[in-house]
Every structure is written in structure tokens, then in C-alpha cells.
Length: 287
Image (cartoon, rainbow, N blue to C red; front, top):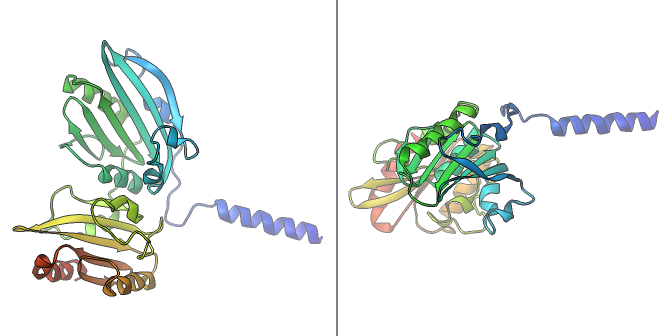
């Protein structure tokens, strides 16, 4: 009887561990391989190499030394296919992340080029590169030499049409004040390594960031002054207050103004000459 009781407890614990987290919908199963165009489906293009899929165990074979920058965005797998037309090669990657928020984050962390109306949001270097996010997927198309832009877009549209639709921008992004914000400068992140090229937060996780924190960093311009506004949503208000105490202790450089409201931490980061605008921006954020 005692053994049966122990077995029942173990089963209940395993069931609890495998249950979906509250508020996080279980992704609908989807065969990513089915989203890749087949040979001949795009005029003149044929498959050059077989599909290759990388997971957390072997991602270093694809992005040696950079795997962690993908892991912090809920990386699950990436599937890669190369295509050829005469002497031109096209590389198509479909990255599967844990949530649509993570897909937006990975997209925003490498946002460059011109805006592109594809998926939820995209960008492009015409004739050479096209990238977009949709649902929980980040898609990257790169050509090794210039090709007609319409051919690049034809691939992109085919993939977008095959992937699950939808995807919402993370809620914390909507908390950014619109006035003076530099368009498309938002970077959504969970952990500080995703924004180390933009701001330095100490390198020791002084703010207690984790996969459970949702954060955004954006640039603001006031005439010749540029500052960055960082917002962090913590699971609990106490964590936001703890992080605020760290910022106000001076352990993180270039903090011009900071505050917290409920579970939201806000900080304006920049050089001293921008101090005059920092307080107003913080006030507009936490009002």
C-alpha cells in the first residue's frame, strides 16, 4: 500500500511538471519541413542541399560561439535548406521559438535594412536578404549574390503562406511612450546578453533578469540628445523594487532616471547631458 501511495505521488508530480504554464497557450503542432518550397516550385530554383535541422544539442554546428544568443529567446530548433539557380545560392532558415514573443525578440535583436510588409513584420536588403517573424517562427532568407528582388519575395511569400498565421507583439512593448521614439528601434529581450551591444547592465545579472522577465529597450531622440528607455516586467512587484534599488545604488552606469510601478521597472539610460529630458520621459512612462 505504501509503494502504491508513493507511485501515485510521483505520477502527480510528473503530471504537474509537464502541464502547460498558466496563461501560456500550448503551441499547435506544425511540421516545419512542410513550409519549405520544393524543387521547381519557384521558377528555375532547385534544392541544393537536403534539409538540416539543429536543436539545442548541435546548434553550435550552425552558429559556432553564438548559440547562447538564440537560447535566451526560447530556441527549440532551426531548419535550414539551400537552393540553387545557375550560379546563385539562396539560404532559407526557419527558426522555431517557444512563443511568438520570442520570435519577435529574435527578429528585433537583429533588425536592419528596410521595412518589409511580410509576416507580422519584416525587413530586407533588396535582392540579397529578407527576414520576418510570424507566429512563433523567425524566417531568414539570404542570397550569396544579388538576385531579382521579386524572386526573393516569392520565396518569402511561399514560406509565410505555409506557416501558421498570427503573432502579437509582446505587451511590454506597448508600454513604451510613442513621443520621440525612434521608429523600429525596439528590442524585446529576457536576459541582458541580448542588449549588450546597446547598453551595459553590469554583465553580472544585477537586475535579476531571466526567462520569466519580459523587457524592451528603445531609442529616443530629443533634438541632438539620444537616450534609451528600458522597461522590464517582473513576475512580482518585489522583484521590480529590488532591481530599482540596484539601479539607484549606482552599480549600473549611465542611469539618468529610474522608477518602478507595480511589477514594471523603467530606466532611462544615456549620457549626463541628456539628464534634462530623462525625468520627463520616465514620468510619461510610469504615469
